[in-house]
Amino acid sequence: MKLSHRTVFLLYCLLWLSGLKAATVRTISVAQGASYTDHISLKEDSKDMDLMVKFVFAEETNTLTVTLISYRTLFVFWDNVHYTPLFKGRTLRPDQLPYVVEYNPKDKFKATKLFRATIPQPRSEFHFKRWIDYEGLQPAPQEYKMVNDFISQPFDIQGKRTQVTIRLHDIFLLEKVEKKKYNRYNIPFGRDVDLTYQVTIVRNPCFGLDEDITAAKGALESVSSSYASFKNRFRSRVVGSQEALDVFEELKSTLLNQFPRKDVQSDCPDIQTAWDDYNQYVDSIGQMKCVVKVSEDVLGGTFSAEGLTILMSRARQLDKLVSRWLVSIDPMERHDLDAKCQNLINEVNGLIGKNNGRTAEERQAIATFRAAERYFYRTCRQ
Image 1 (cartoon, rainbow, N blue to C red):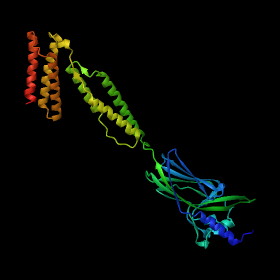
Image 2 (image 1 turned 30 degrees about the horizontal axis):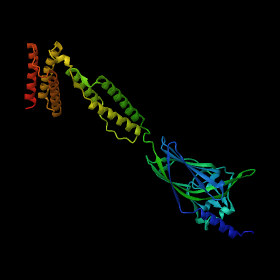
Image 3 (image 1 turned 180 degrees about the horizontal axis):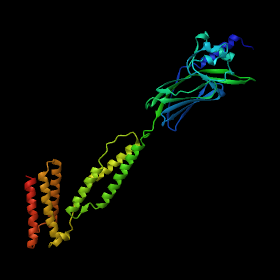
Image 4 (image 1 turned 180 degrees about the vertical axis):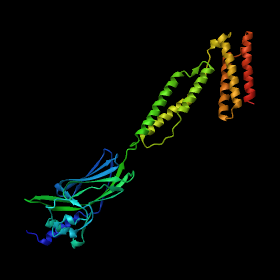
């Protein structure tokens, strides 16, 4: 049965209106090397009218590119455009567009009768929508074409945003009809897809921080090497003399000054992990301790010549520590000096016990140390 023109008009109006559903919102995410591709059906019962829209994020240039891909040739408007004077009858006149567009002046562009019938009356008041709108983005300038195998729009992302919005609207298909002297392009179908994408941009927190990463890893390697050397040198945590203990303390102090703690907070895991490990090594250096222990055969029984030398050395060390305590005005330093004196006294007491000496030389050495001990208690503890 032959359909009347009015029936055809109503059917295609329904077809157009079927595409004007409530706006669809899709939440997507993109990252460097992880694009997003969506499929859009311009006409539900026709697979060859499907579109693909692809979102590609380039972190190095801080850009987001939106690309339309189709099996058919594509045509879009790059601005909102009134039907009149763009169309004269069924002919689309590119020179009436409000922007410059590239095309062959010999080519002709025609709206099919059925497509033209979908434009609501009065047509003079109808306007086509720009194919893409955006928030948080700045479109990169480009040349516009009437006939497109694909359509691409690069955007500069404002600042370091992680949330932007893209809205797709009027998208049209073209059918090429070759003529002898020109090409004619028919517009058989198109509609407002009315599709909104809420785009999450997943940024690499380490991007652009190569120098900071190198610095953090370099500091970690340095403190790790120094810690290993320090630990191996005093592996037993026991030394045989106060002089050796002083060497330990001085080296420990030097390392702590060379490697101060770094209270770094970074979103880059490479940087954060490196500085966290660095701080653990610094803490391990700070927690290392060493004690003096003289072997029993040095001071046990009858003193040897070495034992007498050590005992006299302890007395001199005790005097020097007390002298430093007297001139210091730093409470923390005084506390450390006091502790060193007490450790030295405990060490000697543990070694000589109740031995009062068997020879005059031994008794003199013990008496010298006891005098230094009394001087400490009288000066630092009263």
